[in-house]
Length: 312
Image (cartoon, rainbow, N blue to C red; front, side, top):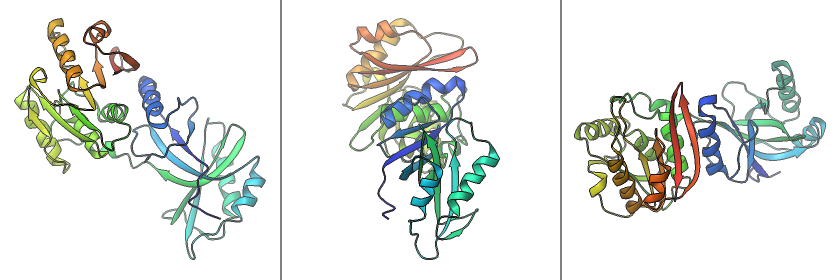
């Protein structure tokens, strides 16, 4: 049996209620479908570490109507000589308790010709029950790369969290190959770090020299190239495939409407597509500068809300 021939891919995910809207938009862009359950099927193959919300990717090799049928198919698999394995159950809706999940794992494990190893197996397999069918295949877990990026030497109290920044970068650039991106108000580089870690070709600018200094320190800390420079979005040149614009805001003062409009017009000039993060209603302004909102979501933290707008 060919262990590299996959029927489809299943992804498990989880998100806090305040970030659920962001999670669904990100997975819609990455996987091409809106997740309605905690396991979503897709024909697209992504690294589970791409998304801050994805926990596992199951590369489906086998499927059956029930567990006995799946077990018979599993028994026909052949692992590499001497290879060890482990089977994990991926719960789609929380309906399977701990004891039942372990029993399912044992049933399938007994049919695999090889040596079970719980800690460091050569092959990790997963099993899931979705839409009335059982599916089995190679299982890959997320390495939660974004968690390591929380340990930045420089911080802003109003900066995006690493989790939100990573999701925004994915929404802006779901397929990095051949895409040039710009973050024209990059602050301390939170979005730059997440984008670079996923292979996105991106540059950042900020009008504040102290912010750029912080961004450079953060980029260097994680071994990324220095892609941050001092620059006013209204004076930047060049053409990019997409822009990621986190609209500046302050807890004590608001950016005047004319300055907001100038920034949005500049983003429109720099890129034909943009993902814009804002704490205010700027729909009318976006329309004025020629942007059309194609998708949106909101991220909340208590009474505070950030709106993420996908514009073309």
